[in-house]
Length: 266
Image (cartoon, rainbow, N blue to C red):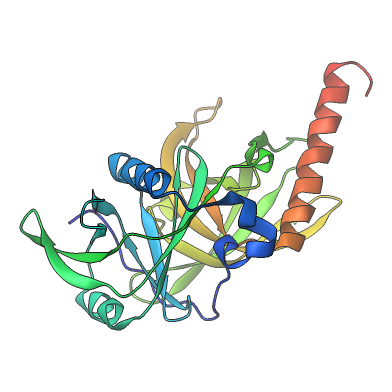
């Protein structure tokens, strides 16, 4: 099986762009050829996929193992927790979200069945009849200004159930997520696919951004002074439209100020 970890249940249901057709209908794909191509890209990139069920209150982490257009089937990796796999097989509907080449991908599946892939247990489902492919200008990544640093606070849950507070400065921000500068000791608690709920990011002159984050990647780095840190790339989870607008205002303003300084106007 892939390194697909199972996460704890969410306290409140999440809402995703694919569930908001009035706002995001233009990003929906219905072509079977296009859908299969994107699913194969997820497979080739070994992209981590969050599969939500139980009205989006529960989820597991999986990956695409095979796309069979002739049979109309999609094969997904099993999670690492047998109990969550069992519950997933009882669920009637799933919402899956992932990212490939910085493009957000979402689709829904019906009931899963148990199958085998390369001699290991896996999930099988009918191919989705629609898929959301979200690539917009606001996914431009902006380095946060040193003069007005931005910090993120979040609660991290350890394996023994205890919690600790993460307070980390932002290295960069976009409409899709943020890059955090974390000490190695705390970064070790955040594995790829880990979920941090109720994260708070204070955007100067804009307000408080409260959101959920999913860890997508980690990179060991060193400052100019020789201090070690870990850059943690995180994706926003179902950021509401109003908060996205606030975030976009901040990004646009900082970019305008930066261009003005470069042109000698500020």
